Length: 307
Image (cartoon, rainbow, N blue to C red; front, side, top):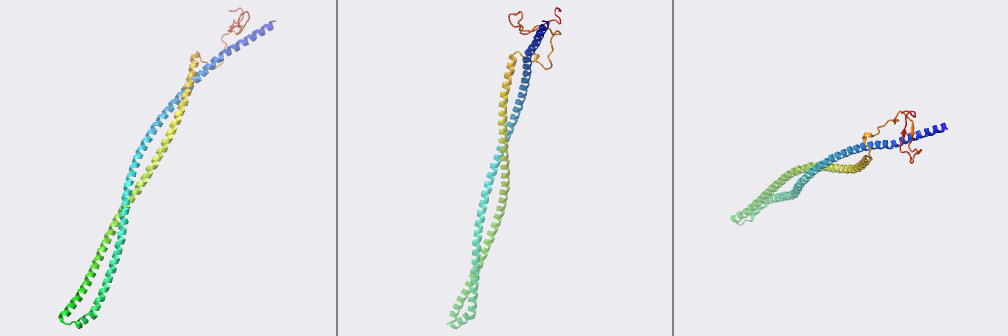
């Protein structure tokens, strides 16, 4: 009988101890969760601040890149306008050179024709002079009816000779004039060619600058696009963090409403029995001599009858 009573008391003590532990476990876990939520909230807020700082830096970079792109675009437009002017001047010079080349070619043909005419005139004149000396003077003397007739014929011959000399001089003058014109045309062509080369050098140098600035503008555009994409990613991350912070805040408010506070938070360690005595006089749920189950645990003195 005593063994059965001892066994029943032992079971009641064990049951009471387990019930105490079960009552304490929710409290402990609630405090641990509370602490984790606070830490998570702080971490999330730190991440949010970090993202906001990065987003501000990114927005500043985008603004700076757009300003640089605007400046480069204006510069390239100015270079394009300058290139248009140079190209127009170069086209004009090319046209003038082409016209001069055609004129030089035409002048060369005239010069060759004039030299040929001069040569032909000279050969004809030599033949007439030779003929006159060999035949004409004798025939004039023999055929003249009088001195006056002879003088008239000699004057006619002299006029022919003078005409030949005059024509020869005129041909020479024409040749000289054409040669001078050709020299002047060639000098003008050389001047235009020098201007053409100088303009072409400017065009080539300007084209190099244009290509360089265009490459810089493309790089800026690419960098701007990357920064814009990065900003969108930061905004997406920020949106997720906002939702996470709202969720954690709601959990903390719910835990605070439950009455759990950091001041009574369980920080770890093992549970200790609250008294020296471990004798339970009335365990949790005991119905002996009760109208309803006992809702607490009664711990008695070390020995019964000892206060």
